[in-house]
Each structure stands twice: as structure tokens, then as C-alpha cells.
Image (tube, rainbow, N blue to C red):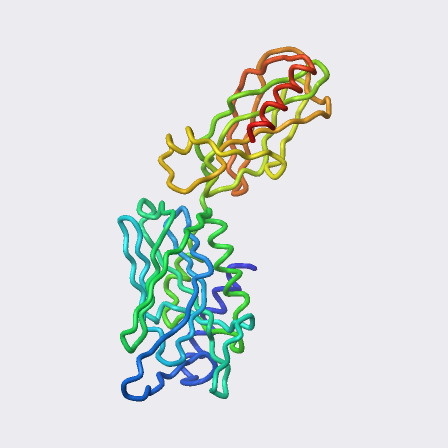
Length: 313
């Protein structure tokens, strides 16, 4: 969806707020009987973190007894509190909860926030929700990292699905406009990686192995090029393995399959030992190219290498 169209939605929403004082999605606090404490159910479906420091939280809450007042995201070295003016609401047909009011309740909630990118390298966050009557609940949530481009796309997709019937924007949409207007990175960065092994058989089969930290930006493909040939390994077709040594070196708490290896029996690879040009292409558009030494094996030797990697996967 074009960004200018999304920004137009924001402007139209601000205009409608000046006219409409009631309607779908504008919850009013209920007066609870004396002595009855408010209880509420909720769930955080996703917490996306952009590599540029943006957070997008999505989930649902049953706050019919007492409206959501604020939420707080807490992680290592950071804490961010957002009051309800920064929280958008959506209808959730998948929930079986029923409301006694004539208008359907907007159980879905989402919020957008900005952090210092250096403080956003998180694997786990605590999300705390507070209602207007003082009730507080919290839960631990796994963080999913994504590139700035993917984050921007998620925000635009969320806004594109909103309408006056199925949701409303936050009263304060400053964070949304900030992310939608942010320029895309001119030169996407390729994360840390290493090509450890390239073996080429005398029948043209080829084997590649290495590791890459694609926890944020996924590996799209690898091109291996010789003097008069080229073999491409698609990212989805690579075998992925856990590498304790890499995880320890990177200091990453969450377990990830950093290792990869691929095999092609197409016979396209050229004969003879020497060097190959290896180009890594990320899904965010980042690219890097390097010369890597290749070793020539017999077909049987290469088969044994593949079997060895299969056995250890």
C-alpha cells in the first residue's frame, strides 16, 4: 500500500475525531458495584522490534469493566510507558468474548513506540497493562526482530486494514507518522557471516557451508560464481543448523540456527580448484561479495561430506 495513502488515512482520522465524540471503539468506563474488583483477560500476540529502534505491539484485552489506561514495555536497559492515547483498537472476530453493549467492543489493541536502537537488541520483554481502576497485569513476551523496511510494511498493512467499523487509530498518531515518513536505508547492511567451506566435485556438483547472523534480516540467496559458471542457493533451500560456537561469539541469548549448508548436483559448477566469487543477498536488499577458495573433490568424497553434514544436522 502506498505510504501517501496511509498518511491520508491518518489525516482523515484526525478530522473525524473533531466531529465524532462517540461511536464504535470509544469505550466508556463502567461503574462497578462496591467491593467488586476488576479482573481482565488479555494476550500479547506479537512484539516486533525494528533494527532502527521501533516497537510494534499487537494483542487483545477484555477491558469492558475498566478501560485500559496505559501499557509499559520493560527489557534489559530500557523501559517505555505509553498511555492510552498511543494505543489503537481493533475488532477481533476470532475472540468468543461477548459484550452486553449494543455496539461491538474493540478487544484488539496495538501500539507503536520508538526506542534508542542501541537499547533495542532484546530477546525478551515484560509487557505490563494497567486499567483505569488501578488493576495491573503483566506477561513475558518474546521479541521478534525485523528490518526497518519490514517494520514499516507491517505498520502500513495494519493501518490499511482499519476502517470506522473494525477499529480506530490512536488519539495520538505521532509515532505512526514518524515511521511512515522515515526514509528507507540507502544501503542495507549485510549482517556478520562467514563462508567456511566450498567443495566442488569433478562432476560439477558443489557444496557450501558457513554461518550468518540473520536474526533480523533473513538471507534470501547465495550466488557462487566461477570463471564461466554460476550456481545459486536459495535461502529457503539451505539446511540450517545450530552453532553453539557462533552463538557464544555473538553473545546472543536466544537460540538461532546460525549455521547453513547447501548442496547442488546440477553439474553447473566448473572443474578445478581455485577461487569463487560468493555473493550473499539479504531479503532487505543488502548485498556483499567476496572471493572464497574452493577445494576440488571426487564425486564420492563430496558425497561423504554431504552425508557427514546430514548426520550432524
